[in-house]
Amino acid sequence: MNVMEIVPDQGAWRAGFDERVLAGYRAAGCSEPLARALLERAVEGIDDWTVATDGSGWIAVEVKEDNGATVGRIHDLTAPEGRAWAERWCAEQGARRVEVRLTGGARGFADYPVRQQIRMRASAQKPELPPGLTVRPLTEEEYPGWHAGEEAGYITDIVRAGVLTPEQAKEKSDRDFALHLPQGYRTPGHAFYALEADGQVVGTGWVRHGYLPGVTFGFSLEVYEEHRGKGYGRAAMAVGEWASRHGGDEAMMFNVFGGNEVAMSLYDSTGYTVLDEYRSLNLQSPSGS
Image 1 (cartoon, rainbow, N blue to C red):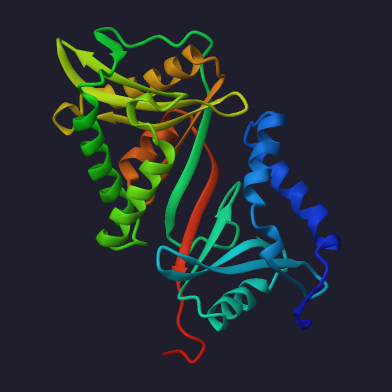
Image 2 (image 1 turned 30 degrees about the horizontal axis):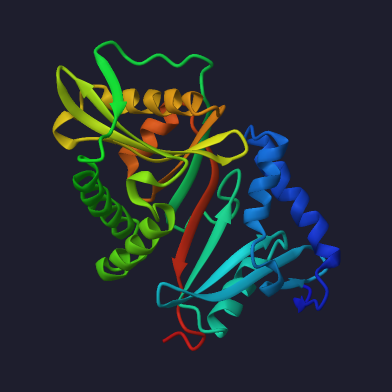
């Protein structure tokens, strides 16, 4: 095996990395403007990455603080024998967990548990709601109760994904809601819906239109537990498509946390492509302790 060496100049690596990322998004069905917008997100902080090569391929890694923990991130890996070096390098920098973002499959990281997926699908030109289901705007009076339930569910999802403690998940939830909804119910670009059937509210939806070029982001499409098992899960996805078109977008994107196999199975069956998959693995210290 050739010796892995850190390179001081990213130039020789960077062009190939950008093209690999773009190719993955194009293969997933993204438009060119959307693929390039996603690339911009993928390379945030790139100047702080460490790039290495053994002559056969590349590795790009980073270590940073995240929710009170030192976390390693593998941003690129094309060197055939590079994963062990990347994990060792992250551990030597103090990381006790290493994460990887994947587009288009596990590619050598199948043993890393799935922590999060970003999924997307083009919406039907004229999405139709299932018979008996109606959608109306959530009222401002309903918003506080909705918000409390959403935050509790979000914390549960984060903890179930297996990365953060309940206390860390609560802190993350507080930050995320403050970031995305700084004006609460009246935050521009966001829309809140109530799903009704037989005169009852059976679920809710929260979306942001124009999140990315041509994309509405579905922050939450929730069916209440007592109404599950009645086909409303698929109905909620139809509501998301309806909301996307209603807001002038062509596709809907959303996040699902690892550990939620029921939801992932639903999304597989309804044709939502995995754009990005985030996996992570706990590391031992370099001494093995």
